[in-house]
Image (tube, rainbow, N blue to C red; front, side):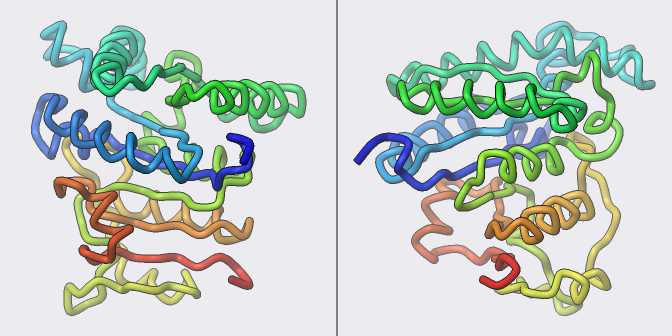
Length: 254
């Protein structure tokens, strides 16, 4: 089997998952993610969409006074992105997984040449067993800083690459009904809007609303999505082994 014949799996990891809901990026969580990706790469071509640049800047540069407005957040992202990639590089290097950084902007998805370049670059990385790590280019684009924590970006990348499965990690066991129970299978996204709160964590900027918007994009393009609890150890293993509750959003016609 050619490497690019493997099913494609896109995993989106937000800031709140990387920090485990605290103020600093957790090296233990990075190791947890790396260990799981080692195993999953035996069956899937994996693309990682990863937030956390602003958190990394605050963690390593002690810039507590920055971050109150959009321009300062863009500056923090510029400072923190190299630190974030260093953490990711070191974590995956320990498991012999080389990584490649791809910084994207929403405008890239409006340009056919840019879309072809993104697709070709990521496919070459996958062909050579290099893990693509995608983040928004926050110094030139502002959408995710303000609203989404890479949720919608991950959906656009999933559609562009025609992935087989999109996984969004959050701090809940998927989407809850009014009894606080996980809605395990979702076909009509409109039917769950009553349960969605427009909440935002202290670390991330997405909340469940942006994840629902992301899975709607995926569903409309015939891609299945899972919303899982990334704060759990072995959270990817758990959902693949049906050991944890999560929400599965079935594609249109799926």
